[in-house]
Image (cartoon, rainbow, N blue to C red; front, side, top):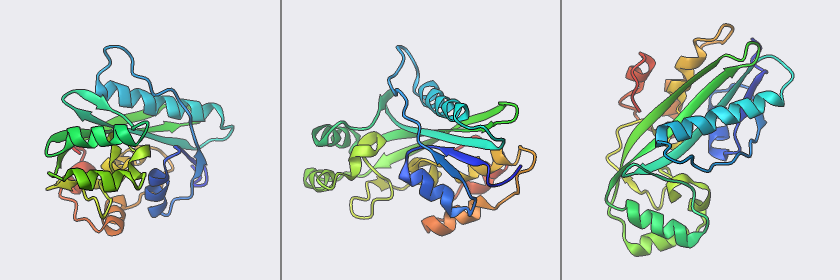
Length: 222
């Protein structure tokens, strides 16, 4: 499998950035899909469905071999999905509801092999503890418009707002692209040249990941 035949089905600049750290050459297809929830759909099924749909939509546009990488991320508070805010006011409400509480970030990851349409998918679930930030901090952060394209209205990596405390999981997954999970799934495909994505990820994030070896060993943790 040629490494120039990798397609990232995502409009997310963060996913493009993170995958770019690996040195893999990839093509980009932005998939515009309906992100509405199905009635009674649980968060894990929801986010996995969106990632699968992105991969399949991308497949329809590609006429070569190779494989598609797709992902989707959502925030879950008390079993309720919190998507992207439609405006600043909703971003304020989301951040207020998350303040000083624990929630989950779920990133679904899909790798689709174009030659036979086989698919590998999994979800990385990360528990997140938010700090007790002040109303003024929320407003200053929201006024930057950074929250408007992010599930839950925040970026874990934002250096000024810095909303998360005591995190011990997959930092890249909360940003939208869990590289260790991606690497272990790509290794299942014939023709993939192994990389040490777990090392690359920690280097670029300047983060000592406490779970990377467990993930690479196959544990379903995030």
